[in-house]
Image (cartoon, rainbow, N blue to C red; front, side, top):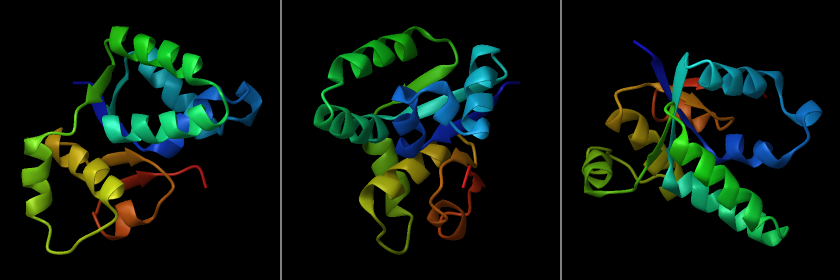
Length: 134
């Protein structure tokens, strides 16, 4: 069975950088997806965060191309924020930053505890396996 992992918006922020600036862990992540060794799950809220950033630098067309590639890839799942995610959020005892909680609950939704991110909150609060490049 192919391993699954959720990716945080911070991972997506690197996709418009030159190859040399992308951390080794993220280059390996991309190669695993290409080789069909890993399926990545991209929450739409993470894509929205990337859109916000790309709009600021005038690169929305680059994001449109990326979304098209993701939609065509067998090893990329674009996850919509939906009622199932909200119901998982209802199980949490405390409130957290909304986008982080949605992303963490996306892990639960897809029955994976692996997240590529740098925010230690995913490990400390949500008890996920954090694959960080920092």
